Image (cartoon, rainbow over all chains, first blue to last red; front, side):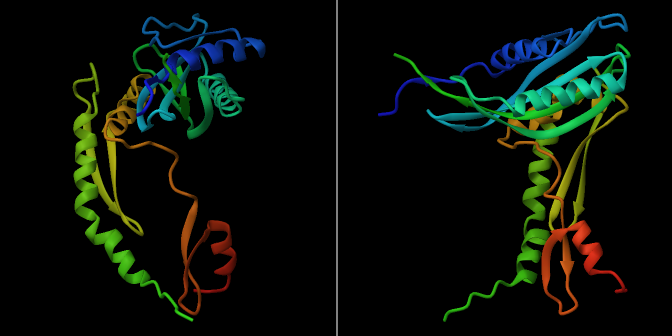
Length: 135
Length: 119
């Protein structure tokens, strides 16, 4: 019989990891799952983390989540640099109880948000989540 | 010794012709699941293409299309809901046919090098 097991919340673990890793590199940014629709040029740079789905599930061992990281910045250069840093931090994730490994899916892609004028740059990664067996 | 000869021409025809229907069908399903949110005039298009195999492109044909994907993951969510994972394009390799007619997959730089002086 298979054990009862659950995956961690991909958004939660990525947000927590990026908050710590970006702070350790002295990046003055906010990190969250929210879309900052009231963003202005004066707003602090924002790292938006979104779970786009979990196309591969190998219960009760591993689930591969597609996670999109979109950086909001005043200039496209800064947005792309921040997105590249997030990609590097994620792909060099050392592994933990929740995350087995992280692989790159799509590299840095810039665009502009027509609603707020923010410069956006996004990357997407595959986060291999480890199941936790429930007692 | 037994030898297995792969019929690359036939494999190519399967990838180009037999896969045309299933690819178009899947692309239409992905397109139908793309949620463009409040950008109600954004059209989601499907474009069929053939390289060395049948392909289809699903596009948010709107100036805000890239931003819709960056902010809401509209295309990736639609693909993931059908068990598809979206990743960077291709393996970076190209089809190369040697002077003797042998076909192989090599990098673009290798192909340019091998093809020097050939017309």
